Length: 218
Image (spheres, rainbow, N blue to C red):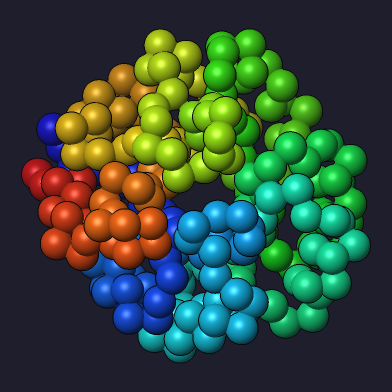
């Protein structure tokens, strides 16, 4: 397996210390969960502190704020001006009109949209969004949670996918699955969370390091 150029996002971090450790390992993006129902939820104050620290030490890393079905007026209010994040990741049931409004009101921040894939037909709903977002994220469908379940999307749905924007694969990504992902699915990026955790929000840094080494091997 040749060395890969696949981008890596580590999501669900909850502390400055771990954010810096993960950044040092080579992450291209770090995600913080701004969804109060999530066990990985981080308050706006702590999130800002983590992102400002990352901005100081690793300014090129994308700082991703993950939100879910939040009132659009609140999103616009929170992210106008000079936000500490570089990306808003919509991880709920946000519709096309929602994405258009954010793109219009907050053009200076990147916009990623996550889609939960239960059946192959779910992929057909994505195309209209491509003109209004900067990246697409495909996650597995789970009845109890919108993300971080560790469940995989059916690999058969993912082969030969093509979008006009970069796309990230999430859902149960582990070392055991990576060769198949890189050879057969070929996403632009991997979004990794629960497979490298000791508990929700607490990453196993040794396991995370092993994953990066595995991806960078010749």
